[in-house]
Amino acid sequence: MAGRVLRPVGVITETARRLSGANLHERIGLKAPPGELKRLADTFDGMLDRMENLVGAQRRFAANAAHELRTPLAVQRAAAEIGLAGDPPPEKVARIRTRLIGVADSSEHLIESLLLLAVSEEGLEHTSPVDLAALAATELAAAEPGAGPAGPPQDPTVVRGLAPLTVAGDGTLLGHLVRNLLANAVRHNRPGGRLELSTSADGVLRVSNTGPVIDPADVPRLLEPFRRSAERRHTAGEGAGLGLSIVASIARAHGARLAAEANPGPEGGLTVRVRFPLPEGPTPAPDSIRLPRN
Image (cartoon, rainbow, N blue to C red):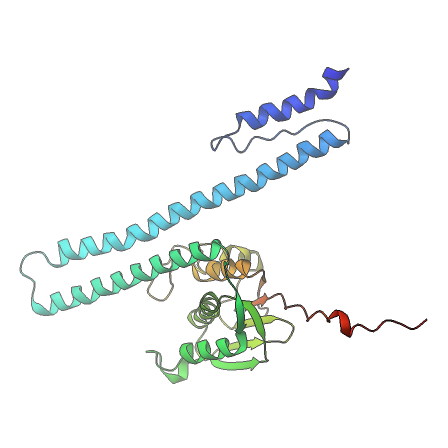
C-alpha cells in the first residue's frame, strides 16, 4: 500500500531527473484522483510550461539578434567589395561612404537597444521620485515632428494632457520608455494623423496614435523583441523591432502594468497604457492618532 501511495512521487522524481534543455516538452501528466500529489504534479507541469516558454523566447531572441547583427555586416561587406572595387569615381565613393555610415549608425542603435533591454531586465537597484509628467513633456518636445523630410503638412497633430504624476523609479530608464513610445507612435503614424500623450493622477501614462489598422490578435506579438508591424520588412524607417519590447521590460522593472490595444475604426493605430504603482500615503505618527473616547 505504501508503494502504491508513493509511486507518483517516484514518477515526479524520475521526470525531474530526466529533464534537460532538449526535452522540456515532456510533462508528468499524472493520472490520479485529486489530492496533494496530483496538485504537486500539476504544479510541476505548469512550471515546465513556463520554463519551456522562457527557453524558447531566449532562443528566438538569440537567433533574431544574430540575424539583425549579421544583416548590416553583410551590407557593409558588399559595399566595400563591390561598390569600391576597381577605381570608382569620387561621387560613387561619396555615396558608398554615406551608405556605410548609415549602416554603422543603425548597428550602433541596435546594440544600444540590446544593452538597454538587458539592463532593464535586471531590475532596479535604486529608485527616486521622478516627475513623469515633466519628463514626458521634455521627451515630447524632443520628438515632436516638424524637422523631418516629410515637411509640416505630413506631421501628426499632437494632443497632450499632462496631469501631475510622480512615480518612484529610474529617470534614465523612464526617459527611454517615453522616448520609445513616442518614436513608435511617430514612425507608425499616417500623414496628417494624430498623436496623443497624457498622464493622469491615478498613475497612468498613455500614448495613442493613428496609423495602420492592426489585428487585435497581433498586438501581444508587437511587445516581443524583433517584432515589427510588417514582418520581413527592415527599412530605414521600420527599426529593429525592439522599441515596444524595451518599453515592456522597463515597465516590469518599475512594477508597472502595460496594456496595449489596437484602435478600432479606419484610423487604426495603437494605444499603450502604462499604469505605475502609486506611492503609499504617509503613515501617521503614533502621537497624532486619536483614540475614541469611551
